[in-house]
Every structure is written in structure tokens, then in C-alpha cells.
Length: 150
Image (tube, rainbow, N blue to C red; front, side, top):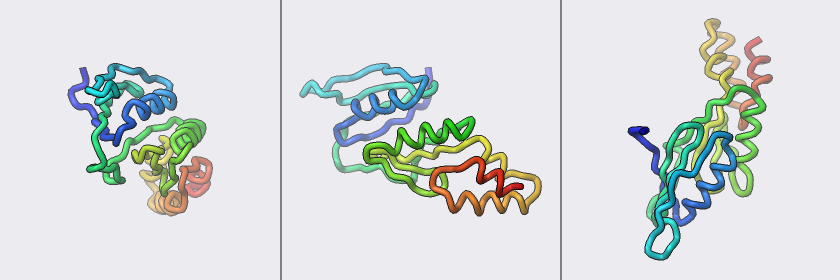
């Protein structure tokens, strides 16, 4: 059992958000739905890519913000494109440097494995060019990063 889980506080759409996330990620499963007194879910538990999450239906007192985000490690540009398009669909919003906010307000970082590798390049000039290129991007473009490093 996973000792520490992320708990996401929604205003009333926890089950809807869970179903959305289950549709986005390839390895995902619904674990449980706890009904509240009204019959609507008060809490749900699900798993995405081996990580368990809990989501609950709270109230409007708390809102998501960018101080906490979910980081998605991507193999390549195709994975970046997949998660970016799915998570920004239907009301999501692009931000800068690989960050986005989904339709529920949850912040995500969609990061190809090439980005940290290129940012840690042993040649500081190449790493700096990669950094400058990334700072101009919304969705990370792996080919443009490689070109900046070259």
C-alpha cells in the first residue's frame, strides 16, 4: 500500500474529475467511491500510472493554485503532445515552461525526459541556451530544445 497519497479538494466534481483523469492516463483504475448523505460521492480514490490519489468534494473555501502541481514524466514529444492536448481540453489553460491547468484548476507539469537532461548538459553554454529556449515555450518542444543545445 502506498503510504502517502495526494488528496485533491474539489468543489463538487471529484468523481467527474476522477473519470476524466482515468480517461487521460493509460494505466489507470478506479479504486473506490464513498457516497455522502445525498448519494453524491463525498470522496473517491483512484490510481494513475501506479500512483494513488484521493479526491473529495469539499466546498469553495479552498482552490487549487500553482504552488502544487502534478509532474508527468514523458518519454518523448508524442507523450507530451498527448497529455498536453487532453489536459488542456474543454476549459484547461496553457501556462509557461511546460505547465498547464486542467479544466478543474489542477496544475500539471508535462515534462519530456530530454528537458532535465539538456538543462544539466556539461557545457554550460548549451545548458543556458536550452534554458532560454524553454523559457519561451508553453508546451515543451523537444526538437527546439535539441536545436538550442546544438
